[in-house]
Length: 263
Image 1: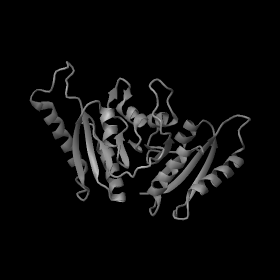
Image 2: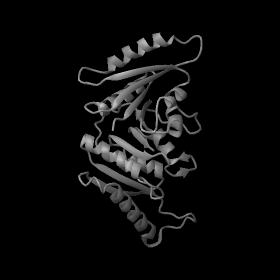
Image 3: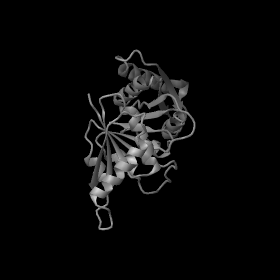
Image 4: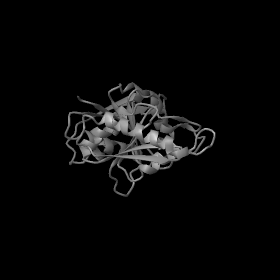
């Protein structure tokens, strides 16, 4: 199946990182890559033709001769969130950049935050590229919901890049009344649920190496820590709700690893 990778473009370093990430995913396959730029709807903004020329020049500067990829460019007038949402469907992968500074609590949602919450498709949020080499794919598994789409996405990426997968499930060893888990009953139950979800999702992918890992503590923090050295962190769009927003929202804001939010 041909999949459309749509990259949000604003000319920033973060957007260049998002484009570079997408280029690596479409090269050598049947997928399409489309760069989408939004021009503000005001009199001071450039014409669509002028903006189109500038965007194409900037995109071509990112694509070096090693990439044998056709890149389409679309320029539309409107707010970036609305323009990007209108450019995707449920089968697309929307790729956007984010600067390397985690958002402060209480700050206004970034473009990436809004897209993660509203897009009908998988959204990949790419922070500014770190200097250290990264390897491996971490996928967050929620025992309270189906993580099959996230695991399937991780498997596809692992096969394409020949990397291994670490399936992580985070939990709190304390119950709602503050008591510790007596006899490790809850830990055993969660390990069994993690194993069942992984086995179900990987029934058709016996060639993929998957390590199962149960980590204790605040879910978002532990998931981000587990992926610090990974090349990609995969998480479901509906990952559990928490006081500071969903676990998924917290992970996207804090991670310095590219995050694929899968629907």
